[in-house]
Image (cartoon, rainbow, N blue to C red; front, top):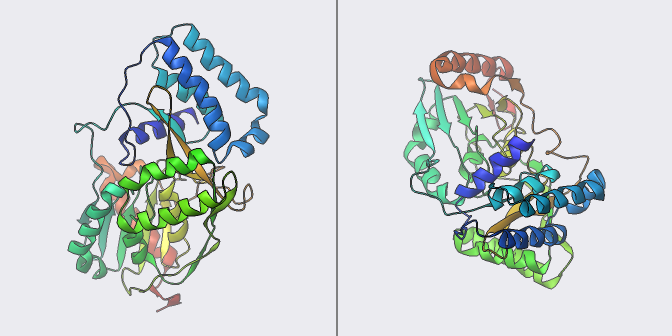
Length: 361
């Protein structure tokens, strides 16, 4: 769980929505201010705080806080961000963390990729649903749409996709859609600090996302300190049912989290989809990550929404299990060709005849 937390913090550091202020580690006094400030910010604004308090008990949280202050006082050479993230790890929550510095141009991009595997099979690799990759994914789909819909089988590889925004994966959801599917809604914790944090995200959003977010902010401003509707329980309905691809594998691993898991939840309800690989991260119960400034200028990122139906409908508890278990690592390197052959065989065996609009052909 600790490794999962740190992986999410690393992801936050390169996220398109994360515009961190670069600061030096500074003195112990500066770090102590940040640590103390984080205690109140989490308690007031983290959407999962009440649930985690009930699960963990106050003493466990207090011990983690005391240990963070002890480490600052001991003058550890560890960065302040690491000390902060270590105490936050008590919540076992990927949607929480501190990262320093802006994304370097030397860091790897996460552009989507397309490949024709055979006359029957196409492959889409989508490493991120962050808003900055939405134009690239939509452009890729425009260029290769005819090649995708000409083939009966499609593999959508979302391994390592730490999430982003639902509007980014819309073009993928259209490929797997057969009929309306139920989706669980969520509420947002409308504290004044969360409302301000949501406003900070507006410049990073596309126009349609910005309009939706402005409506959410308006509801938050009308009901300060309360839970307000983020989006209701209901059905996701899309406009077009494509005859092909008629068999789709969504390839997952423990790196698929947040919005990636929401895509998997929607896709797996399509009769022409099988989820393949290993269980997802388990990082969706408390979502909509938003930035809160600490005294030094570092940003503390907190999940501000809570899914309906918890704890019974929790995704965080175990992740989303695949229909077909295959080691995700087999799809890289020298084992890739054999793994693809096995995946296609299992997909055909599982789905049988072609499926369109919920009826076997």
